[in-house]
Length: 247
Ligand code: G3P
Ligand code: CA
Image 1 (tube, protein in one colour):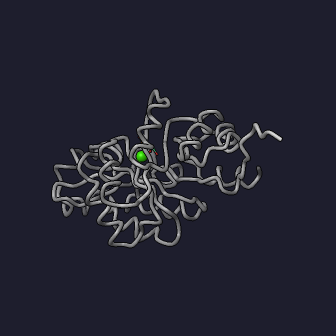
Image 2: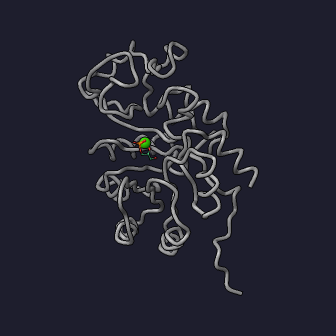
Image 3: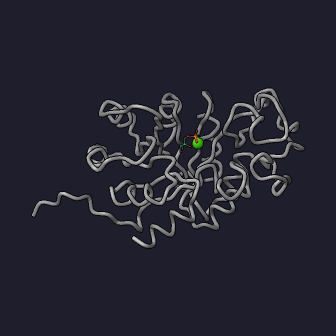
C-alpha cells in the first residue's frame, strides 16, 4: 500500500496566537497573551526589540507610533521612560485597554510558563545572546521556539544553545531555503500563507516542520490542517481551536 496523502493528526496541529490573541486585545500585551492562553493556544507569538538601556520588550514596530499613545523610536527610550506609555492601541480598541503597558519579555515568559509555549520573534540584529540567556535563566528551553527573519540571529542561537528555531520568510522560497535551515540544524520553517502538501513533504523529509503565518480565515485554517502543516500563527486562536476540534 502506497500512502499518497500525509496523515493528518489534527489534534497535533499547533496553534500559535500571533502577537498574542491580537484580534481580541492589543497586540504584544499581557492581556492579549492571557486571552491567547484562555483560547487554549499552544503557543503565544511575540515580537521582541530592545530599549536604549538594553531591556527586551514586546513591540512589533521599530516605533511606538501605531500601537501606543506616544511617538518615537523604541531604541531612543530607556525602559523607565515607558512606564506611563499606554500600549492599549487606542486607534483600534478605543480606551478599553488603555491601562496596558509595554511588557518586558521576562514578564511575558513568566506569565506563559507552564500554560502556553512561546514563539519569541527576534525583530532586530544583536538580540540572540540576551534572548537565549533569559530563556536559560527561566529554564524555558523546552517551552519556546526562537524565530526570526534574520538568519544570522538564528545561527547565533544554534551556536550557543539547543533551543528550537524557526526561520521566517515573507516572499519567494524554495529548496535552497530549506537547505539553509537544515544547515544550522533548524527545526521549523515559517513562510507566509498556506503551504502545499508537496512542499510540506519535502520539508519533512529534511527534518523540518512548517508553521506558517498569518492564517486567519476559516477556509485557510482548514486547508493548513488538511494539507498536513505542523501549525499556524493566527490572529484568531479561538477560531483555529474550534476548527481543529471539528476536523
Ligand atoms: O509569526 C511570524 C510573523 O509574526 C511574522 O510577521 O510582521 O507579524 O512579525 P510579523
Ligand atoms: Ca511576529
